[in-house]
Structure formats: structure tokens, C-alpha cells
Amino acid sequence: MQTRWLKILNKEINSTRQICILGVGNSQKGDDGVGPLIIKKLRFEINKKKFNDILLIDGGEAPENFSGEIRRFQPGLTIIIDACAGGRKPGTIYIVNPDKIQYDDISTHKLPLSMLVKFLEDTIPTKVIIIGIEPKNCNFQEAISQEVDKSIEKLISTIILLLSNWKKTIPQTPQRTP
Image (cartoon, rainbow, N blue to C red; front, side, top):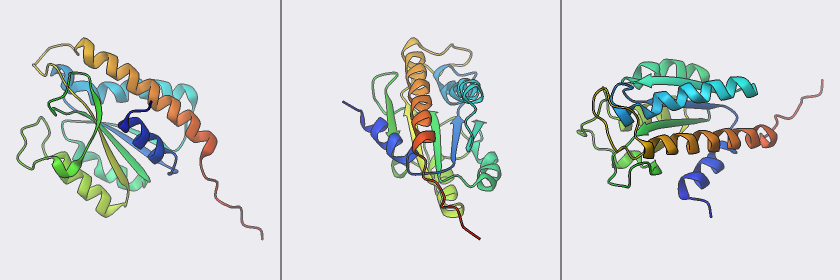
């Protein structure tokens, strides 16, 4: 049985032509570094498989600084990956509703992700999905927890599989005859 996040991700990936994946977080704060770490690992896999039409960005603690690059790329889908504390079991992967992110939430980011999502959707337009991984430990200089590390590997292998299938099913633009 597919989980909700997997169903949504599969549907959205298969309905677009260009994808931006934006990793968010502080790599020096344990599980909060999940986004940048996933981008680093995905970059290796995506280069190996020679996928096109995918933009990978390590947004660190200030993902809004990359909004211009994302707008120039014009993705139909932007996937944001971040450690998100939602009261779930550590390592849980889930879709975060940007409307439920509070503007005053304490986070390592300069601006709340909800503001970035709204800006991107209003200016590109792009469909934005936030994939959250429930952190266990976000202490300074701590390592990624075992629970989150397992979820990182699961999410990476899932994304690679979905992208492999996407390249086979991507809608083709009809060729114009002269």
C-alpha cells in the first residue's frame, strides 16, 4: 500500500516536464541538515543516470536566496525537502501543508517556507510540494539520527525510481510539421 506522500509525489512528478528539488536546512544541526544532505546524494545519482530537466539546489538556511534561479528554470514542480517537526515519530516522511506553517514558527530558516511557497507559486507558476522528515535531534554539531538516516535513503531511492519512470512517461510536445 502506497503512503500518502508517495501517491502525491508520484502524481505530481508524472504531470510535469521540469522539476526543481530544493533541500533546506542547516547541515551543522543534526537532522536539520536532511535537505542539503539529500540534495548532495541526489546530485550524485542524477548525474550518474544523466537525467535532464531537473534542477537540484542546496538552499541551506536561506532558500529564498535561490528564488531567482528557480524562476529562471521555470519548473512545473518544485519539491522542497526539509526537516519538519510535526509531532510524528522521528524519521516519518510526510507532505507538509504550507498553509499550516505559521509565520512565527521558530526555525533555522531566514523566512518561513510558507512565504517562499507563496512567492514561487505566484511568480512562476509552479506547483510546490514540501516533503518533511520528522527530526529526532537538531542539536549543533550532532550527527544525523539513525531514524532520519533510514528515511533519507528511502526518500532518495523513491525519488530516483519515480524519476526513472517519469522519463519514460513524460508527455511529449507534438512536433510541428512545416
